[in-house]
Length: 152
Image 1 (spheres, rainbow, N blue to C red):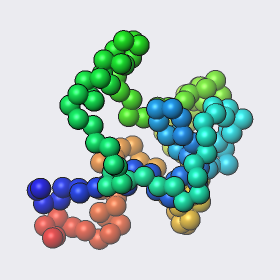
Image 2 (image 1 turned 60 degrees about the vertical axis):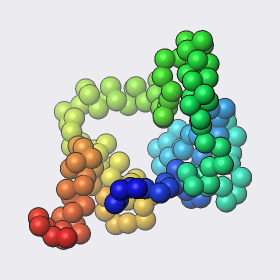
Image 3 (image 1 turned 45 degrees about the vertical axis):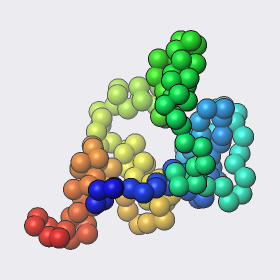
Image 4 (image 1 turned 180 degrees about the vertical axis):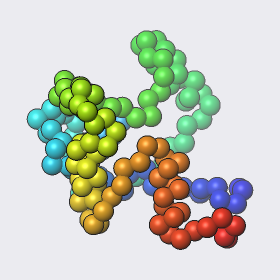
């Protein structure tokens, strides 16, 4: 094991499981934002109270033969990739994106402010800032924490 390498990883926290549904091949963590349209419920079953999943709790590790069988199973059904995540984009989502695209404020309009307020509320903090990339988010986290170049 190398320094900084993870021994295990929490994949689904107990808090996240409160708004997560289990499907046959994946979990779907659903947002709790007021603007999230719950009328498009896609089924799935709710997780039991207190459920969490982390890699150190996994009792069945895949052997090479298991992986070959999984790939063969998916290939035989026309599935070309093993999904890590899956998004749902419905007609309402498309309609909202088109409204923003047609507006005068593509990058810093009212939807960004609405998103920032929803994230701040979800995180129970006063402010949240939307940025254009993970790199920008990490940079701002360093600035907010007072971390400067050369610090250890």
